Amino acid sequence: MTPYPDFSVLLVDDEAAWLRSLRLMLLRTTAINNVLTCQDSRQVMKIITQHKVGLILLDLTMPHIQGDELLASIRAKYPDTLVIILTGLNTVDDAVRCLKAGAFDYYVKTWGEDRLTTGILHAVRMAELERQNRQVGIGILNQKLANPEAFAAIITASHDMCNIFRYIEVIANSRHPVLITGESGVGKELIARAIHAVSQIESDFVSVNMASLDDSMLEDTLFGHARGAFTNA
Image (cartoon, rainbow, N blue to C red; front, side, top):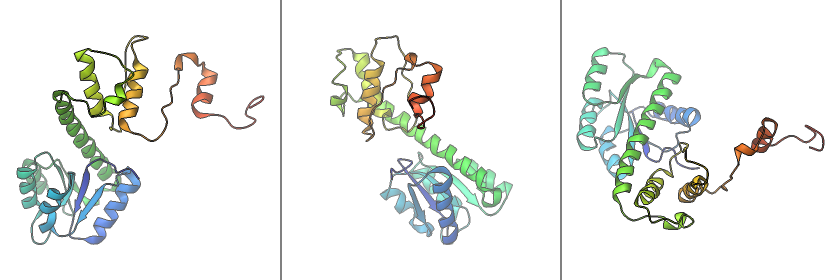
C-alpha cells in the first residue's frame, strides 16, 4: 500500500483506545495510512526528530507534558509542522490561546467524525502544498536533473524548457492532477509521458485522443461495455 500522505501524521494522546479509533477512522474515511501514534507526551519531540512528520494531532490535556507546552516546543523547533489541537473540553479560552500560540486548528473530540476528518484533510492538503512550494523553489534552483532519461524524447537547448523539466521532477509524485496546455504540435503528450516516467507509477501510460471520439464512443472507450450491450458487443 502506497503511504499517504508522503509525510507522517502523528497522533498524540494518553488514551490508547482513542488513538486506535482515530487511526482507524482516518484510514476508513480519508485513506490516510501514514500514521504514527504516541501515548507518552515525553516522546513526541524524539519522534519528530526521527521521522518526517508534517502534521500532528495533539491532545491538550495529558500527563507529564501538557499539549500547550508541546505546541510551543514544536512551533519553536519545527515551524513547518502543522499542529491540530484535539481536546475533550469545549473551552473558548483554550481555543483562542492555542490558535494564538500557532496551532493550525482546534477541534473538540465530540464535534463529530465528518467535521474532524474534513479539518484533518484540509491540514494535510495545506502541508502538501507548502512542501511542494518549497520543493519547486529548490528544484528550479538546482541545475541538474535527477531523471534526465525521462526527457530523452524531448530535444531542446532552451533554458525555459530545462526549467520546465526541473518543475516536472518536483510535481511528478503529487497525487493531484496536472493540466498541460499548448497549441497542437508543441509536445503536450511528450510532457505527459515524461511526468509519468518521473513519477515511476507502475501502471501503463494510456493516451486517448478525445477529439476523435463522439458522444457515443467516449464512455465505451474510457470505461468499456458489457457483453451484449449492443450489436456484436
